[in-house]
Picture 1 (cartoon, rainbow over the protein chains, first blue to last red):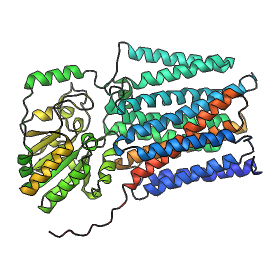
Picture 2 (tube, each protein chain N blue to C red; picture 1 turned 180 degrees about the vertical axis):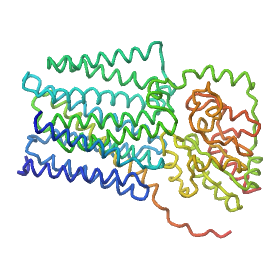
Picture 3 (cartoon, one colour; picture 1 turned 45 degrees about the vertical axis):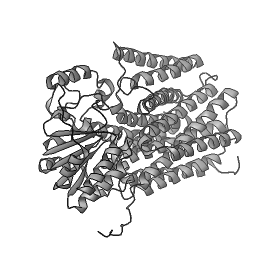
Picture 4 (cartoon, each protein chain N blue to C red; picture 1 turned 60 degrees about the vertical axis):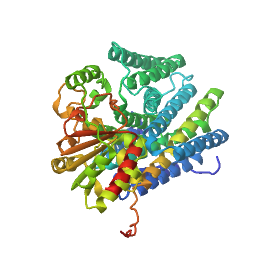
Length: 467
Length: 101
């Protein structure tokens, strides 16, 4: 111990830290104050960490210093270097290591206490095992989510016969192992629990399609929060309980809000094996329409845009991948100078996370007031001359409205097909992230402009200048 | 039930209600930064990891605690920095001077 600080002082500091975290989350949920909210939360975290360091419970420092140094270097480097488009998988990774930390704490504490069989309070054993279980699921699940978003693993759902039964049995077995580990306090059962939970995390996320990953990451975020809170019960530490529970609760609500934006229940996301019936859906679209679509040149499209009254730009993940957001803003500025009314339609789940598209457009300095939410922009489409769909796909698929057979059915979409003309900028006719064919491309008022989004936008800019 | 457990449960229950109340009116625009920000906040497990690392006796415990500290630090540091990078972009941009036609 460096300073003689009483436990009372430390607990008081934890209270101050907890208030900072609460104020931080509050400020994070409003656009004007969000950035300061993040700082306030970070200050709260710093208070909790500093006062823990001077706690009388800590005897040796070298392990902590070494660990923090290594972690800080990795954390700073990865946070600095990640590109904005790769943000969702970065959050998944940070979430995963948090869950892993909670599980490791539980494992170390179990190892320290368990030999004194009968001396461990039942609530501590229970909390340890809960933390080990949930933390491990969050760790391995987040890694799979990362792999899918980073395209190290196939984004499509990985499904096999009887998967849900296997998962159900595995989870039941894990609960049984947990009870055994708790009652016998034998290390071997704790290890089985950890390994089984890691396997369960993998199996839980594998069958979920890439398009649903944001919801899964949000859920795993809540899991990690609960795991952290649970370690707080083990260590009888209020900072951990407050911080962890705040995230557990708000993360659960956020997960539900995201699911609602896609008109899907959590159970449907987790167990629906999104995209499984795709083969059937794609086949019907293919042979019924014989895939007849219309291609348009950049020049023709530019003329349409330049002489339109109202243009709505519908950006999607493809725009971000191609780094076309700056070009799109330039195009919009050019059109506005010609007196065209330009708006951006933002689907709540455009991009790979809710709000992701707002972040990417903000990066390109697109002014706020031009961004419209789905509810506000949908009534505008019938009065729109050209809807320019750039790298968005599933969120414009009219099958979500019309085809009860489609896996997308029921998801609220941007009704771009209601506008007079639709131009879709796309690399090829390949289906979108969810692996579902899009009826929109075969509509008579739709034209396709093939190519990399950035190149296409640049060709459009040049052509609009010439028009 | 011990007093310690009861007060832990009290803190837990009140925090749970608070967590839900705090974000019930968040605009979709902020879903990603909020998820990232709360993601950084559960990095509070670092406190637990430090307590374990500071009192670990056996080599196994030290190894587990060391990895836990590294993981939790990545969670905290990376989480707050990434959130800040996202939110930095939402700042009100300075008015650009009117470009001559």
